[in-house]
Every structure is written in structure tokens, then in C-alpha cells.
Length: 185
Image 1: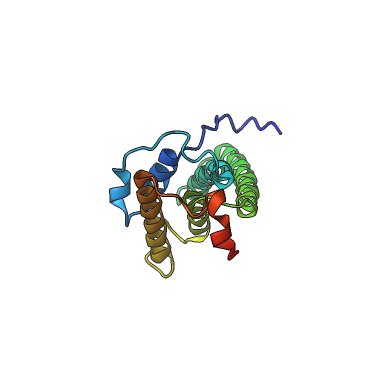
Image 2: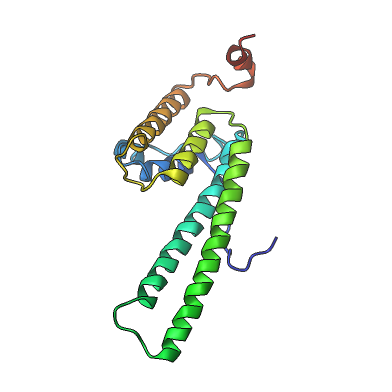
């Protein structure tokens, strides 16, 4: 499906990219922003991270579309009304922005559903899904209402745990040879 509005090239999801993106959205974990980047192939084995990246792009596009629509709405309904011809042009631009926002919202919903259906195979993959969940439904990125601040803290904790286990070379529970431990076999 070709979309002329989407000219962005998707880059390979890396554990470092993931940590950088999530850390930037977590006001409770500034120390994660200073973490060293891990090898670019560190998380290529987790399908949730592969599906998480398109969701992030769709979410960003939705945010940009919403901001444009809101800006046009403010200018359309300002206290000083422009001449009728200019008002008509603003109304057409606003309607196009509303349609673009609707398309972006549908694309973000579709990407989110794909992410929820994709199993995570690592702490980073599960953290990506938790990040998407919290980002999608929280009222704002800095909301202190429960449970949003607590969810951001859990995400930061999971990132720290995963970074520590990868840095120390410990096996993760999600490794195939340890699946029986997770399933109780």
C-alpha cells in the first residue's frame, strides 16, 4: 500500500534506539538517556521490537496530524474573522487536516493491534509493548495521575534490568533454552 504522505524510511530497530526512544519519554529515568548504546543487532531476535518501530512512526504521525489540525482549528475559529475567501480556504485546509488525522489515527490503531498480537521474546520486547500501551492511552506524557507515573517507573525498571542482564552477559529468561522455566515444565 503506497501512501504518498508517508515518505519516511524505517530504520532497523536496535536495542540502543529502543532505549533512547523510551528514555526520552520517561521523565522518571533521565539516567537511561546517558546509557551506552548496545550493538545494533542486540534485539533483532525479538519480533515485538520489529513491530514496535512502525507503531512508533504511526504514533508520531498521529501526533503531528493532531497538532496541525488543532493549529488550523484555532486559526479558523479565531476572534478576528478573515475575509470570506480566506475563511473558505482555511476551512478546506482544516477539513483536509481532520481527514489526515483520522487516517493517522486508523494507521496508529492498526499498528498497535499488530504490536499487541506479536509475542515478545525479551524484556526489551515486553517493555516496548508496555511503552506503547502507556503512550497510547495516557492523557499526557507527563501525567502524574495513577497509574501513568507508575507505568513509566515500571518501564524504566524493566529497561534497567534488561540493560544490566545484557551488560553482565547473563541469560535472559526469554532465551529458548530457558522457556521451560517460564512454562513450568
